Image (cartoon, rainbow, N blue to C red; front, side):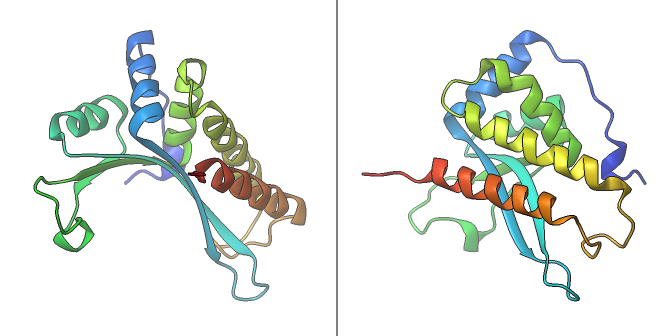
Length: 163
């Protein structure tokens, strides 16, 4: 069984990278969340991912076959009450997500800053890999936690729609 940190970067064509950027600009989600991860000191554990939700299964299969990650069908509880089609969700996390964000960054128009934020926050995860302790329990330097919070807050502001 491989670990998430064992992700091996693949080569992609410009067309694949540009198409993925178009999908992320139009339908994609860049997500940073946090929850209490360290019971001893209350430090937050941050989670990052990119995702695409659609009713088109062929797009899900293309994303999965091209970029890996995972995809699943929404459960009936996750579906909108008036939904007539199945909804699928693809997502990538960890170093796979970082690599995809780096690939698509030059091609993004609308969500360029979101990808930059994801790249910046993922680098704090890679920098923190040498810190000893069980996953979600290690004491991270205050500067890393503050930077992650600042990036998460900026990403949330970019998601806010003023009507």
